[in-house]
Amino acid sequence: MDLSTPALLLNPSTSTKSTSSLYSSSVSSIEVHPLVLLSVLDHHTRRQEGAGRVIGTLLGRRNTNSDGKLNVEVTNCFAVPHAEHGDEVAIGKDFNRQMLALHNRANRNEVVVGWYATALPPGSEGKDGGSSNSNEEETEGEYKCIADTSSLIHEFYAGECGGPSSGGGDGDPIHLVLDTSLKYDTIAIKAYRSTPIAIKGEPFANMFHEIRVRIKSAESERICVDKMIKGLSGGGKQVDHAEALLHHEDVLGNKEPGKEDAMGLQMSMEKLLQLLESASTYVDQIVDGTVKIPTDDRVGRKLYDAISSVPRIRNEIFDGMFHDSLQD
Image (cartoon, rainbow, N blue to C red; front, top):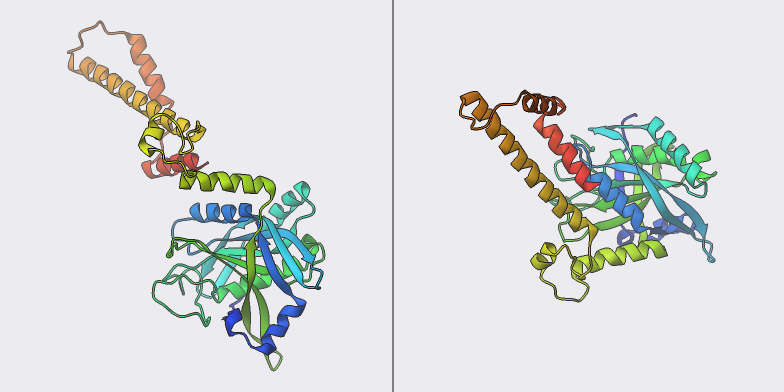
């Protein structure tokens, strides 16, 4: 894609009367489901090493309130591969269209309503995420919600929101940003809409207006979220966590399959280590001639077959596959 135009950030508290009139005919509020936030965080956790931020497509519905204002409900999302280098950005357009086609088979009521991104880490400007010309305070160590490359990505999704995938939408995408820095022990959620700024008919910059966002949960989502919160807080019941782990119980005093699986995995690894040590000792004794039991060729062939069946994988690759499997 071409070089980006500057991205300016306008907070509601600093907007003037002339700019506030822009909200009357555009998105006034956003409702985000917990499933979307968990999917974005999972994408961020699995990002490639060295990636500044991750982006993806937001799916949902556009509804008009009784007062005529437009409300966007974000119900789903999926990750989209992209690369940012300085002021240039590349987006996996074909991947995005294929994923949209698959989602439309499952739920035709969900349309493209915008895109998400995680905040840019400090030092990402100019390397993998572009430079930021917003009027946010340039505080050292602060994560950035808007970058110059955000304008290019937003223009791409403006086309997606105005195309067939959006059900004939108005081409006004929303931009959802999650701050994963955990600086204040919380994950900040911000939403923006963009307004192009032109000087003498030539595009000059995109101004991002922050709009109100709130969490909306379906009944099934509320049950899961409540369970997660109670599991973290202890549900108001004082339980010794170490004792609960030993008895395969959670902090609510109930059986929890996740911890049973973890304990079972630990026991299996310990047993496997013992078997490997026993086989290694047996082979060393055979080589040294100090074995106290008659040698058996069948045992040697069994050991050879077992070793040959193990694929040769570098340690760092195996560690990555193992930890990904644990997260799943």
